[in-house]
Image 1 (tube, helix red, strand yellow):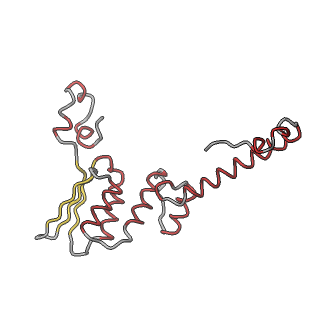
Image 2 (cartoon, one colour):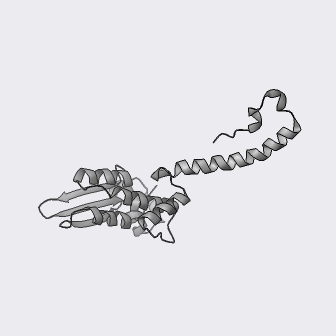
Image 3 (cartoon, helix red, strand yellow):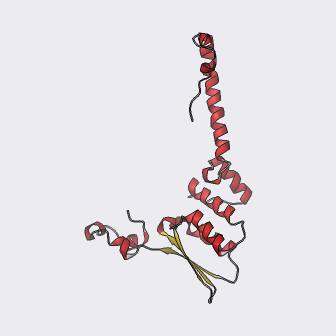
Length: 181
């Protein structure tokens, strides 16, 4: 946000008068606070930019109780997730929802039509959000489908770019279940 000084709005011959300079300095502080509040209001119009105040309001509207360990991003994710699940379910719509909340490459989706099984595998980066994604899926998929939600663990192709020396300090569980950079 660009800081606008009110003194610059005066005609040039009044800008160097001490009484105007002091009066407008006091008003500048108030205008900065006003601009910040207006900016916060605009941010709260969009789910992806919600501030803490906006998140609290949406949680109250949606009857969501945040966990003590939740970050603002976790809480925002939960709100977006709940908001997106209020649409009719189709396979394509499910793909769009998962693209939005997990990213285009953040999941794998398989539907076994013969056995009525829907398998969703989430990338490791969405590991903290698996519970919320599973809850969302249970709310929108048909009741006759069996739902299997799991994590896409690191594969050999991911781990093979590291040397044994680099991997030596990690446990097998860390190598399998954590995002490796």
